[in-house]
Amino acid sequence: MRWSFFGLVGLMSLSAAAPMASAAEDYAVLIISRERLEVPTNCEIGLYIQDQLAGRLFQEQSTSFNLPAGNVSLRLKLLPGQSPGCLPGLLAPPAQNITLKVGDVRKLRIAQGPEGMYLKPAALEY
Image (cartoon, rainbow, N blue to C red; front, top):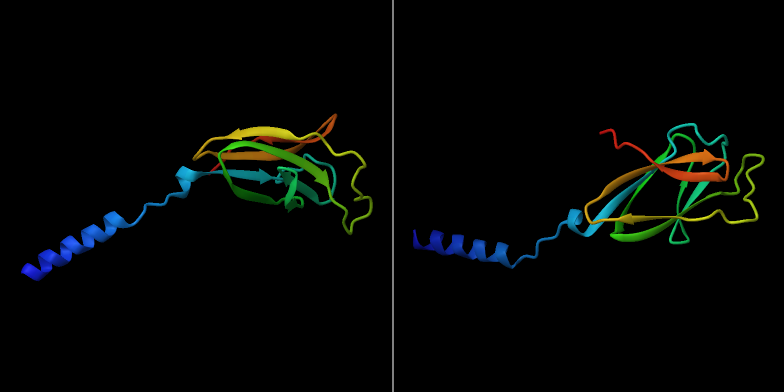
């Protein structure tokens, strides 16, 4: 009986000493979608986060990122590919800046406007 009590106390002290880690408290989730046919090209689109290529999207694809909270610079650009006419432009498109908070789950979709491609807020739908 005495040993089971000491064993229980020992297990409780080990769980108190282990650091608690929770991804929901440290990061935000950013989902980028090209699920709709709003961009009239079959070319691959590159997603740049903080001016670094972070993902490539074809039609009907989406990708997600765990990012630290704060300001994030996002840029879209056509990437050279195997399809005809998929040559990148000479000018880099303007970046969009968003602010992520700890625990956020944000979904953006790629859309086409008069000035080119941009990211538009989308519903999570799950």
